[in-house]
Image 1 (cartoon, rainbow, N blue to C red):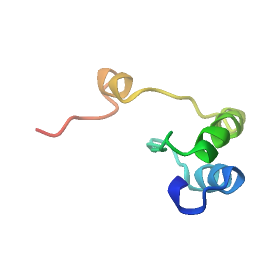
Image 2 (cartoon, one colour):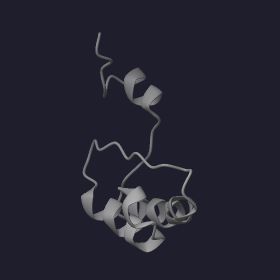
Image 3 (tube, rainbow, N blue to C red):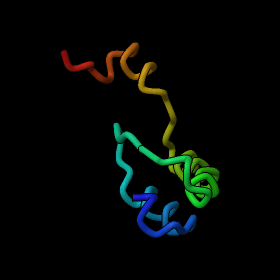
Length: 68
């Protein structure tokens, strides 16, 4: 809900608190506050042991399926 508050720190905190293994994170780069939140999100999630993949990478690794 990066569109809700338009506050980078709130967006960062909301994402970090809600994420879980296998989660998809959808953010809207049309909001400057979302763009500002991304470095902190990445830094904090990497520090917590998370890694990042694109959807295509997840599908290629069999970690996600495409609905038909």
